[in-house]
Image (cartoon, rainbow, N blue to C red; front, side, top):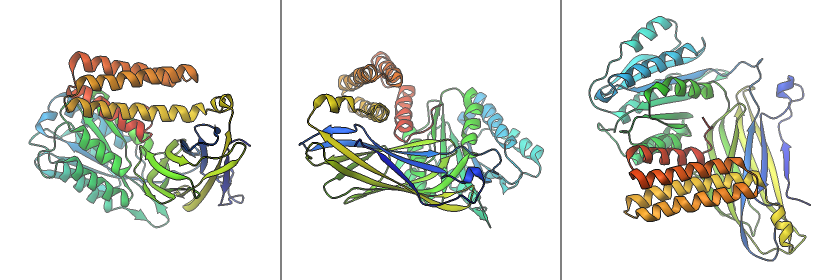
Length: 443
């Protein structure tokens, strides 16, 4: 019997319309190999996929509670503030009559230019945005805190949950108030507990990418590095498209391993590991999204032809289309063989690609750390070795995505040798590593 995923829906929805008759989120569990080497202890990779159904056209989407927090410090003069204003105006034009919107700007001073509420006069709102001019320094922490206060004014309405999202734009270093990645990480973690996701957009080459990625990661938002302000309208539109397609929230995932199977680490996601149990919390899932979670586990030496239970997985979430809690489960069993060829042929290319992409993200992070410690040759060696591993895996398992990633890593390596770890390259490496490890949608 091959490794398999058993999907066991808990909530029966047969009496509801067709789109509600099946689970909103399908849960699948897979191993990196369906047949493992017998009679030896080893590490295996479990991939858990959360497959969220697309939002049906006939369904009314949940209303959003959106705040834009815009940097208007002096460095935003010229094209950056112009394109930021255009992006903000495009964003409000996509909102519906039941959506809540607020606008906070920050420099040395934090101002709420549009208090949280429905947009009853869009022309007035657009004019307020057009009148934003740059000035002062960068009180980023205060801007995020004020944006959160606006969101808190409209957290819920009876019988109709809202999607709470903050979009933060910054082009400079936070130089007023708390300014470390740790400070913003703690703030992001606190906001996530309130159901608020923060998406961060870093513009140009002067912002702190460690701070921005930490804030987004801890709140389960997205993160972007935008070199040219002309791209702001596109990024705002794509991010708002995600926000308007949220289908589930309050997502809780658990892995329960049987005795003898030891969880080692969650790849790319913060997780609570206690004994045989691993718990991961996600803020939101988008309609039509595939969200992947990777877990390394240690397996005991097992005889050939023996089926070993590896994990029982569970996901629990609030279905925002039905205003109801749903739970899905999946179980995973591994088979063992003494035949090397059988093990080799059982490699799961989909899981292999996810795992190799995670290793590419780790290589980027390691290269940055090595370079900044003065170990420049070692940094390039890490990227070179990773690109070779990606290319070999891509050719072996016919995975064009890995070949493309190998080319990307090679490009990073050549740029590191040519110009060193300048601000632009560092931001690319840090942001791409964060996007990959957290499964952010490709843009």
